[in-house]
Length: 315
Image (cartoon, rainbow, N blue to C red):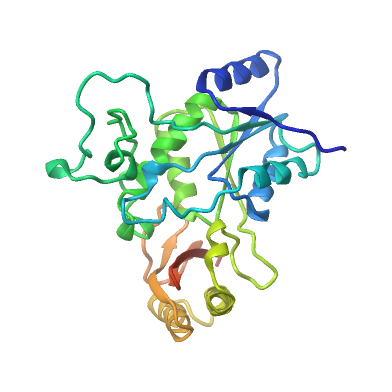
């Protein structure tokens, strides 16, 4: 099938109108939210969404609400024209709509004092608040237990911002199905729980993590790795594979020893470990011994690049 140009929609009202028109025609809508700078991992989510829906919407929006002021919002990679070309090349006819809003926290004229941050004593907690671009935005979605631990320890703003922007996108796009990658394992579980708890009528599908040929988990941030840093970063996936093999073969089920082996391998390669945890797949509760399906989650820093990876362990 020949590639096609997707319809590019920038306005919230126009997006809702398109979705409601499609629904009125009996079409099902699949949705893949992204922050752009697309790679094969993103494209795999689109292929997965095509299994579940008639029409596909991809959003491209770098969400300031999930970045704290000391994080990499300003340097997050972007290539909108390149993204459109990649979307046109997706087999099966590309995608139908690209939703590319300018600022989902801009509500037009706002009468009153802008939010000072929502934290204790007016503490600024995300780039929405510190930049004043939220026009008084003060409603945030939190999945209180699942957002703790793992990435939530070092990025306390992140999951509040993710859950909020995804809820906003769900209300604008109104999809039947939404697909998230399992590379961001905690994020996927948080969105599933939010959808359950708030009764969104949306099926949230988790798609398998995609790796480059050398084993590195695909990420938009990989572009910031030097060749030497990338080579050293392969210690993440290699140590995860070794731990998974040892656990599933029954050779090692003690979580501390498995974690320590991963941490040692990454540190010996010159990486800084943010966390390495083995948690239960649904609750994300830390485990001492593996006796049921678990997932080994890692965040590590090479150079200035924070990388995520994980592997499910099924015993």
